[in-house]
Amino acid sequence: MVYLTIFLTFVYYGCLCFGGGSALVPIYIEDLVNNRHWMTLEEFGNLIAISQMTPGPIGVNAATFFGYQYGGIFGGFLATCGLLLVPFFLMILVVRSLDRWSQTRLVNGIMDGLRPAVFGMIVASLVIYLGLSVFTEPIPWDKILRWKPELPPSFSINPAALILFIISTILFARTRIAIITVIFLSALAGAFFCR
Image (cartoon, rainbow, N blue to C red; front, side, top):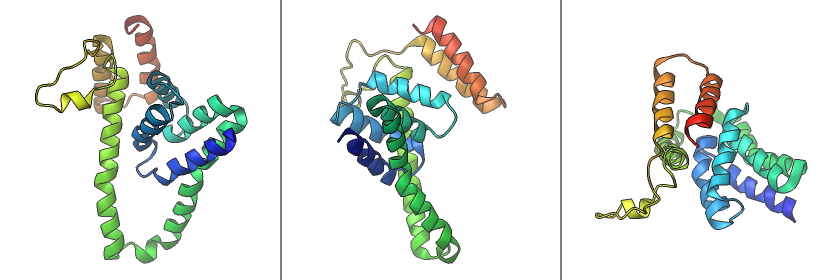
C-alpha cells in the first residue's frame, strides 16, 4: 500500500509539472509538508539542497530521494517513474503534433496562458527557497500581507546566509563560474559561518 501511495502521489505531481522541477516546490510543500505531514519543512529543505547538488533535474531528484526515504530503493524507483510517466506521454504527443498545430490560435493561446502561470510558480519557488535558506523560518505571508503585520519574534534574517545568497547571485550573473563550484564553496562557507 505504501508503494502504491508513493507511485500515485508522484503521478499526480507529474500531471502538475509544468515549468520544470522548481515549479513543483510549492506543490511539494503544500502536499507533502502541510497536508500529509510526511516530512517537516526543514527535512524538505535538506532534501532540496541535496537534490540540487546531484546531477539531474531537481523535481526528479527530489522524487527519487523522497521515494527512497519512505520506500527504500523500490520506493525511489516508483516515485521517479510516477513523476515521469504523464510528462513522458505528453511530450511524445506534443512532439508528434507540434509541427501541425504550433501555428494555430488555440495552441498559441494555451502557451500564452501557461507562460505567466509557470513564471508565477517559479517565483513562488524562489520565495519558498528564501524562507528555507535566508530567513530563520518560512516567510509568514499571512501576517506580512496585512497592513500592520506582526511578525513572530523568531522570524529574522540569517546574515551569513543572506551574504552567501548575494555573492552566489552575483557570481552567476557576472561570471561563468561552474554551478558545482558555487555549491561546494557555499557548503564550505555554510559549515563555518551559517551554523
